[in-house]
Image (cartoon, rainbow, N blue to C red):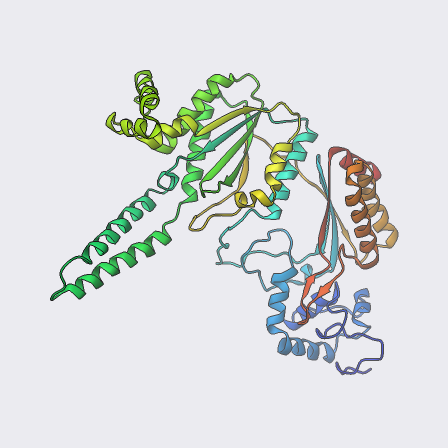
Length: 487
């Protein structure tokens, strides 16, 4: 039998050559990757040899592995980072090792909870963070995180749980000093150094003037460098949110539940929304007063007795009527009150009742639009943004997962166990989802023919940008029930 890797019959495609059409294939690319490390073998009777054009695992496999090592050392790392994506995906480097049990070909997973049905196709190789490597810096709200928020809302709707109140928490005008005192100190030091540098310009030039100029300019540069490093700290924002949760529990008990979501305003300040349910007995007027006072005390870190004094409020209104807002704010300083805390107490929070029985407002905030894309982008110099959303006092429903080995399953088994439940779920969608239904059916047809949801796209270097991986998600409690009934 011919074992030369360069001798290919007419009309036959060698799966190991990255420069030939059709490369890589769903199974052959994994086999080639394993062969490159000389740690993977197959028994002669294994049916997967048909994917390798019926070539035996002899000296040709070793020669092929060396061929890949020589021509595609960097290509494989790029291939892994580009499209081997599964659970545990992050923006950190992926592990470059795989065991034989992880290279068993494609799997189809049918997963569902009370509100979401998922069909996922991929291999057993999982993308995980390498040991000793920290995760990258978060710069925006990812599509995966958006999808998880919507999964939670569909789960709540399936349980007939709907939001009743929305609380908005905003930071004051000087928000950077509120969440990063060291940043405020760095700003003050930079301004002082800059003033000293400008003042030195008017000093008569003489002996030592140049050394003094260089010294003051070095102080300005050091202050600017420190100012760039000490941006607003997101950990302090989460500490404020945790302090608010503890105060809320002490004041109103533990019967309520909520979802919180973080976003950013145009000025760069963080902004938090809280969506509560099981809180119908709360008095809105009393809640608004308590929330405004509690949030300002947490952010300012001081007592508000002087700010809540009715006499001071009457004086402020009198000064504003007689001299305007700027005059009234100037008079606050003479009364021993800070303008930022005074304004934050009046406009730092908002409490609204939600009368619609759906999670549409949260879904709209999550999806956003071109006009509000800035809300889900982390501002420059902002540190430690952390989680974008979360939930309190709620126990999530578990996922039911059915795994099918596509290498050993027959076409009939695939249709009965995978395609039929998804088609039943698609039939429950309303008429407004007609376009999505048609695209989903096309994806199922392509899946039956090729084992992939999308056509493979290969760049000039042979790197697969879209491979045999993908998700198909159908939302709705009725869709999940229809899929379960079709199994």
